[in-house]
Image 1 (cartoon, rainbow, N blue to C red):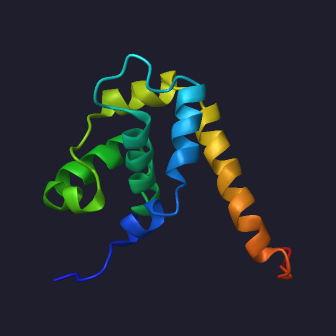
Image 2 (cartoon, rainbow, N blue to C red):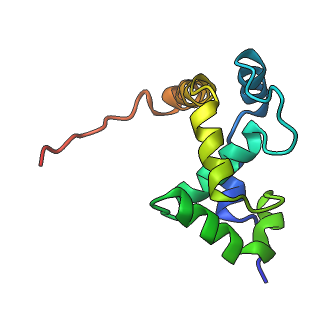
Image 3 (cartoon, rainbow, N blue to C red):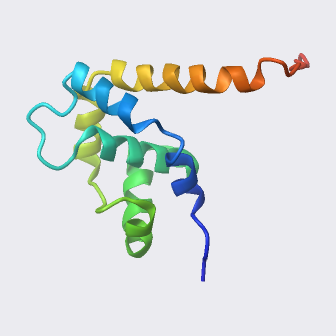
Length: 121
């Protein structure tokens, strides 16, 4: 039995929730939405990234295959492909762009003194 947090839960714990909610409110990401909000969309897409899914269909199949462990990951239900596709198409990308920039702003001072060597291929 796993006694610690899952990798997915550890990754999502780094997301600044207040900043994300401010961005969602600013760009009206949850306007006229009942259940499939921006937070759920972010979790589904992060799940797809961490499990190396190559398409929305892969994400949905992987979520439905792991239905019994989703609650422990903070995901309440699986989603169908068309809902995820519509959300990706209709929601403002500035929400997630702003989140990415906020995360970069948090991480940049941590690595400011580290020398990164780039080796050309």
